[in-house]
Amino acid sequence: MVRLLTWVRDFAFLLVATMTVLFFLVRLAGDPAIMLAGPDATPAQLDAVRHAYGFDRGLFEQYLIFALHLLRLDFGASLVDGTPALAKVLETFPASLYLAVMAMGLNLAVSIPVGAWLGQAQGGAARRVAHGILSVMQGFPGFVLALLLVNVFAVGLEWLPAVGYAGPASWVLPVISVASFLAPKLIRVIEANATAAYRSHYVRTAVAIGAGPRTILWRHVMPNALLGAAAVVGAEFAFMVTGLVVIETIFAWPGIGWLLVRSTLNLDFPVVQAIVFIIVIAVFLTNAATEAVQVRLDPRLRGPGAAGGGHG
Amino acid sequence: MTGSTPQSPILEIRDLCIDAVAPGVPARRLVEDLSLTVAVGEVLGIVGESGSGKSLSAFAVARLLPDSIRVSGGSVHLGGQRIDDLDEGAMRGLRGGRIGFVFQDPLSSFNPVRSIGSILIESIRRHQGLDRKAARALAVEMLSRMRLPARSVDAYPHQLSGGQRQRAMIALALANGPDLLIADEPTTALDPTIQLQILALLKQQTADRASILITHDFSVAAAICDRIAVMHRGRLVETGLAAALLAHPQHDYTRDLLRHARLGGEAS
Image (cartoon, rainbow over all chains, first blue to last red; front, side, top):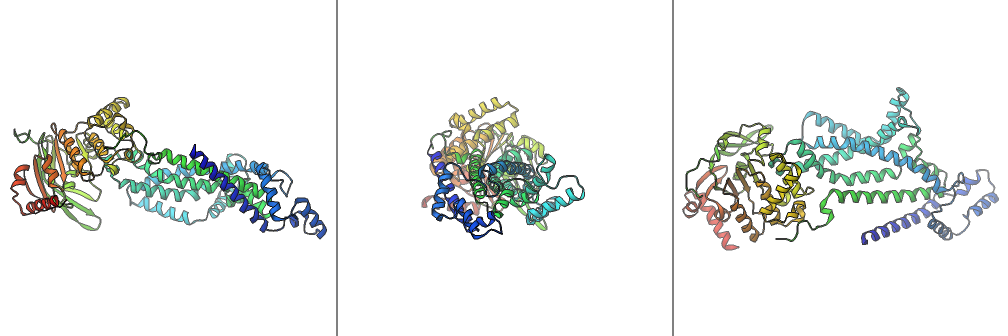
């Protein structure tokens, strides 16, 4: 109960702080009236626009109005097309979430076995080659790989669509681009944790009870290695739900990253504010889920418990 | 049982040599021509400083050594069968089965994310082929024989005290009724009051099997060992019945160790 209350308090504080900072930041970005009225507008027309949208009021007054509307989850209408800002964001968020979930799925499917393999004995030519590839991938900007993939598979071979969001074929390139950006980091963390686990006393105990290499890897080493990797997985997922701006732009993937770029360029304050609102919630939920997974994986985080009884 | 009837040894180590090997460097000898025997019901203490090769020698029996350390000579027989030339699969059958280990630090020696019971059950099922339910029942029985409550089967290592963890470690070592019990400094990581309990508990489990107690501490060896072997720099310097060796040490190094042990005892 107390845990839930602190959770709600933290969440509320985070939202209020973020939305407040954001409100003042976007108003430093420029005058939306010019955008709205067009480049040929007369000063009188500009004033009329400012008055219509309430931009002529004091900044603090605008903030109070914004805050009151926020309480009702009303972010106002998009300055570009007049549709409700929050609805517009909620329409695009699923696309970002799908991309994040699919990329994380691929990332885990590759990183766990590869990290486990690299964490077993060190040395060997195959492992050196794998390390080399990882180093290159880590130094490779995600968007370069994305453009490379587009060039080869969409433009050159014409196997897959380059852009858009229509059916599984259009998911392949964006998902691979994101996953290949995430995987090297996760592989290295799993490898380092597995290597440390192999040197531990509890693995010696596993050997001493006659466990074979596969049992040692999957039942003794990996539970510990993945425990340390959970924080990285959570951070990577949080990073993705904040919108994969570059990837979504390259692939014209209609997610919140793509919408954020367009709305910022248009000085579409209501939409930007609604996007950030959703991102804050998504990141907060991701962190909470990460914590829950860590508690699930690590009995030490569940407190002393009653199973052992007293000391002595 | 102590030395009453001459028994054929359960464990027989002959001329054992152990080397540290590293690529590009000549092998370095860690243990030289070690020969030891342990009979049923007998507790052999191997005493020496750290680096004397006492733990390596005992672990080498089940080839429980890091990759960088190799057995390079000699032979090991367990119950009359030569085991040092067994392949890895057959050796796995002995580890935890006919040979049980108790390690120094029970906290780091239990997997932090696995319950005590899950490790016990894994070992019991591997060596006795029991189903999950029967293995769990046996795990609970082993723990209660070590005077741990039945619910400790579901406990994680951090939920037990140091003494409880070491008793769980002994339960694990004995779960499959080994012929040979090897305890490596089993009391070093424990409080002095707990040390005596653990030694007494270990002593109770030594009747039907051969046991090796590795320690740097003569008082620990004196408490439960029938015979003592003293090692120094990878060589056996002296071996004899515990009482005789402690009363009349033959070797200078043994005398030195004993003198230091007594000084340490007075100081504490």
